[in-house]
Image 1 (cartoon, rainbow, N blue to C red):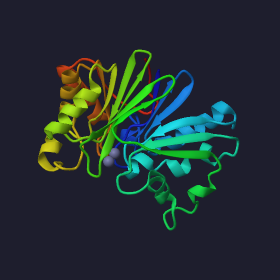
Image 2: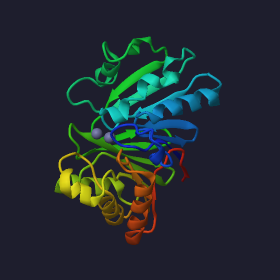
Image 3: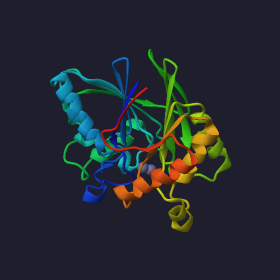
Length: 272
Ligand SMILES: [Zn+2]
Ligand SMILES: [Zn+2]
């Protein structure tokens, strides 16, 4: 299992010199298993993944399963700029998520409708299929992907990817404090090799003004990794106002509690 980070920022892209070491693109994580491509979220980092795939295949067909945690902009904004979707060379993209209020296809296509974007999704030549999922497990030939609701305004799904004895958990956009969700995310992360987790705020920022905004902080991320028995924590969904220096400091503090902590950065790869 190869994990690649294409976007690690939360809320909005931040192309500013003080945070480019960790990266300014929003959520997008690629997972490759046995040559198959799975993508978790389509923030602005998704655009660069598209360029990489075009280069790799020399413009030929690409197939990928794309899981969206939810539909906030920082998780879908890369879709209109993902060039393989416009390819007529037989590429196939399978979108998976839960849309509680409207059909999944509509939820994804709406951001490209008049007057928000000049190109309609119907003009994308690649084959697209939409799977409206709920909590539960999606079985594939080489892996299984379990979805679980997290605590976030308008809902958000966390995912547990299991393949050949390796476990990766992608759980972003989750606020602590609700006993049912707190328990659920620890269950989802149980024994994982890698836990990618929402660490948007500093604990003091969260306590002062961010209650109810749907996000976590690094101290809670450390709690989740320790209480779930997951092995390594990857801090993710960095706040737009957190500079590289701020994130460096977060990692130092987090390691005082748990040694196997890293902050996600654009371009980072993990081979499991
Ligand atoms: Zn987000
Ligand atoms: Zn969100």
